[in-house]
Length: 294
Image 1 (spheres, rainbow, N blue to C red):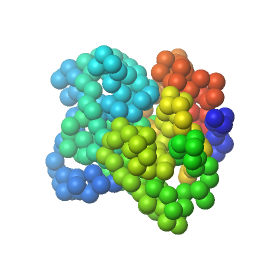
Image 2: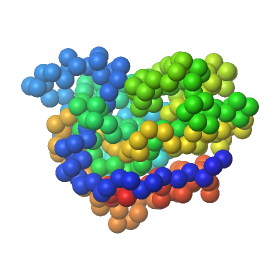
Image 3: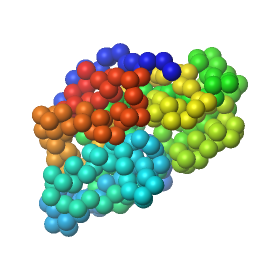
């Protein structure tokens, strides 16, 4: 396994800049929800006061994306995103209701009011920003490619004439749709468990998703390697709310900023990711503290 490293190429972002320039989901699910988002008079989101009055904060997370959001053997949600979700509800003074989402329906769940917040490894992109509002970031990410050690994909040239597994509604699907490699065939699945099973069964030559995830998965699954550790642009992951829900967006941004005083996301990493990555990954290359990307 190569040592995981990022170039520090992103400038610091302010809460105001994030709120204005980064927001929402994009992909198959988005095309199904355009009608829901065109009625500007229909308020589907709940303000901070309304959430407090209800006593419950609803947050969408993954249930099958270990180590960021997953259900353990005891039926309990665990992971980096879940750790943060629990703190958001605690500081808001409400109970927490975790709702399982898939990559392709993250925006839909906000647009239709099924959840108040999405914390599901949601990479900030301009296209997604047209659908939802992103808060300050809490992690850095690029794409990675995992493949069998017996037939490793070590470069972009190795992707030619191969079958590449992707999950619908992810930045990987978008990237490989927009950047055509000679003879590359995309094999698409709705869920991460399905995608990993397909890779293990040989129904694809490789699988691409966030490099943070494939690195962790390869460490836990002997016989697989991440031959391409960073592909595409270096992006950020951030919480998302329904477009226009300014009170909740402000609450999250203030929370992320104030949590920096206690090194919250470094502690989150230590509690949920450190045992998975071990010394092969420098957490300073992944964790964003206080919404400031260096």
